[in-house]
Length: 88
Image (cartoon, rainbow, N blue to C red; front, side):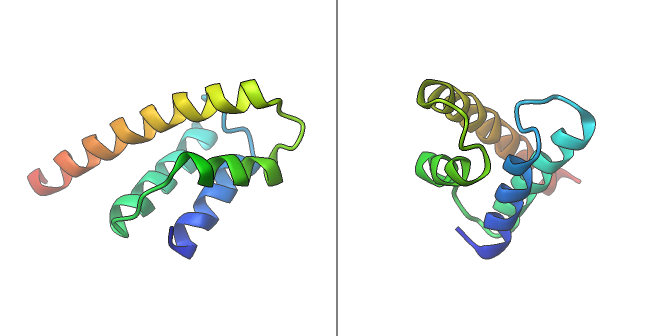
């Protein structure tokens, strides 16, 4: 994971990553764009470790559900962006 991706991940997770508020969504989109731009991957363990720092009060079961849900979303957003960019 690049430093840029790590910073975007920290910014997104330190706020309200479970929210669908436009500002929170934009932080997630910034992360996905950085992942695509740097051809980086983000692993469950990366998110888990950052959540320990940013959201220490979240219980383990919630963390695992969050990771599963957000990894699917990140994957879908990456796929869309990878498709979109060459066409525009």
